Every structure is written in structure tokens, then in C-alpha cells.
Length: 209
Image: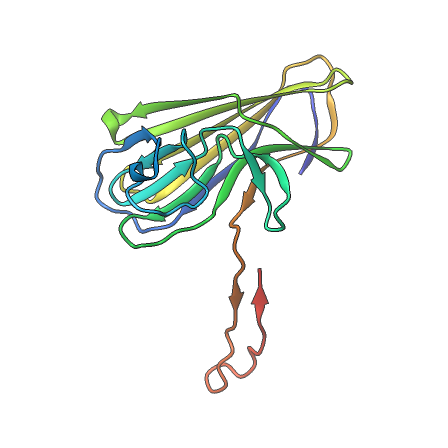
């Protein structure tokens, strides 16, 4: 969506669900320094300095260093710092290349990707939940200024990530015809073919993503 922004707008709220809710556990957060720090090889994009979040049921990896995000066409676009770069059920031998969280402003139909400058983990509910708060800023030659605050919340045993991002105009000049989003790409391609000649003869199509 596009706005004329003079103050603050909350523009994105999402829940990402991968596994069914499980019994509550405690959350462990640690910084990855070497491959052996990962309980299993579930994210090929990991680098030293990334943040691992685990409750024994799910594995989540957050980019902890400033490095280029590359599209499926191998083109650099933004930074992986502060983005979710891996999220799988633990112990299933699965891996993915999920990317979600890089903030982007759209001004005059042009994407302006921002880089999070700070990442602050915060424990909640005696270790049964935690939040990771990320902040980024924007400033241009026209005098427009903005800040982005994104929060990822992980609750032990839930198998989900709650994501909330707020864009705030911190300058005197308004943003006109503004778009804002958090980058999302599963970095994978899928096809779906529901055709069954006997049970569903009319559903003769395929869907690709």
C-alpha cells in the first residue's frame, strides 16, 4: 500500500506458522561462530555472527552480519542483517532458504532497501518467549527522514514467528506516494497439480510459484 506519511504508521503484521503447537519449553539464543554451533545444517546461508534461536522443536536463524541478500537470479539487493534466513522443525533433516524481514521503502516506484543497524534480543516470560528488536533509518537528499523498528517474537512450543514492523517519519518533511514492505522470498519454486481424472476431472490445471 502507499501513503502520505507525516507521523507514524504500523504497516505490517504477520504470523509465520511451520509446525503445530507443542508443549511449552524454554528458548535458547546464541551467536553462531562455526558450523558446529548449528545443531543441524538447516541453512546454507549461515555466517559467523548469525543468531540461532531454538526451543527444541523449531530452529530459527537470523542474519547477524551485514552481507548482501541475493535474489533467485543471484542479484544483490539488500542486507541479510536482521532478516530471518532459516526456519525449520528441529530433527527432521530439513533445510530452507527462507528470507523475510529486510525493510524497503518504495518512493517514486523505486525500491530503497534499508539495513538494520542494531539487533537487540530480549527474554520474556522467564525464558519461555523472546523478542528480537531491529532498527534501521532512512535519510535522503530531499530532507526526508524515517526510522523502521521491526520486532520478531518467538514463543516456545508455538512453531511460529510473529513479525511487527513500524515505519515512523522522524523529519519535518512528509513522504508522499510512499510504499513500505518487508522483503519476503522463500528462495524456492513450487508447482501444484490437483488433477485427478476420476475424482476431479474439471480440475485440469497446474500452478507454479
